[in-house]
Length: 263
Length: 313
Image (cartoon, rainbow over all chains, first blue to last red; front, side):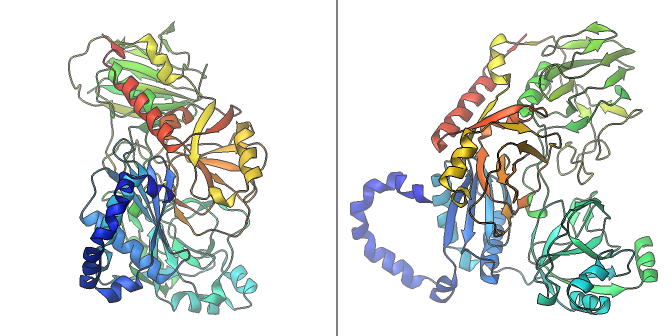
């Protein structure tokens, strides 16, 4: 944050030189390899009660890994006064109690925490298979996407179901996971006008992303099929998918869909 | 068991408390009362904790029969309430006798009126909150706005009841704002100086299609420098995002948790409750303030809200 020079530490500037050897020693004891591969964090106030942390300037695997590490770090060892966390592709929005912190206070606490980012060992990703029926009834945009991309509907299904996707984050509505990246041949813009209601379980694509609608909500993604799985269980407030999971779509028939829906 | 029978639900009536915070990682919006200051005051008038669940009515209130009676207070905007055809005032404790009917009509002031009941509205909690999130159909009464014939259950009374009223100086706290104080949004640099000036100096009107997800504004189009899509990121309550057509949308209590439009500004925390009282076609303006001013205004508001003499009785 640009306001960093307004922190009280500014008065101690002259002492920085005295501490230089200690700083050097700390660097030596650091795990240099992982420290050097980290993208620098950039802080940006979003409102008087929220602060954004960006890693780099673009969507990348490295940036997303750092978002997940920081999320895990703040979930495992919460900072009192932080009330909510919103992870995304290369950023984490932190909502805080504005009577407890100014942005600069929170930034210095987080900068301390960030030093331990390399120590976080994220658990191996869960592998989750989602059965999808790609029948026209469930995937009203399948044929149109195929025509737009000069592919057959079968090729679209093959491309969509042959890749393993990463859960970048959950947003929009409870349990809606943003999955990527689609095969380049499938990258298609959103519908020009969103549908008033998309059926629960619908599997859609938008840009280079794919995802499953957990509820019947308005939506602008192009629909290729539908899963009989419950993406969000209201009774237990649990989401089938979590940030960092790996997801594969498995084509199923109409009959299998009906069986699974009953189960 | 004390019940409330919904004879007419009004335009859009939901169960709300102070919302569920902390579930951003699974995409769950906080929800909660659109005007939490009014909810807190209403609850204090009936001797409830600030965050007890109440009915939030929008623009047009409902009709409610109380077969066993109840202690209630109405807070927020004046919906012209009557009890068995006698007018009753907002912002004071009212005792409803068994079999009496409470009728609310169209608003005479702002968008929302809260019906708070001694004991609170009892519903099954979702992630620790009674608030309704209509978009996903979660929380509140069956995840939806009330309908005719619904029967609500009132929770156990927290303590003996005594009549209370709101001090006259509380009007400062509840006054409807027309100018909303803002701080810079995270993408303010994406807007040229003339675009920002146009935003700060224009009057906007609240569009009809505004709801608890977002308040849409009509007025001059505000254009960002680049129409290139930005990378989706977490969005804060009160963020003012600008659509590719140049329309501002203020993200509100049922907001989606992430978004991909640039945010030019953010309404300060102290002014968020007043957003909940804006009606379609209301005219609003924006006034930039610095971070310290935003903080001081919030401290002052909390001081007023927590002052010992706010509630009389």
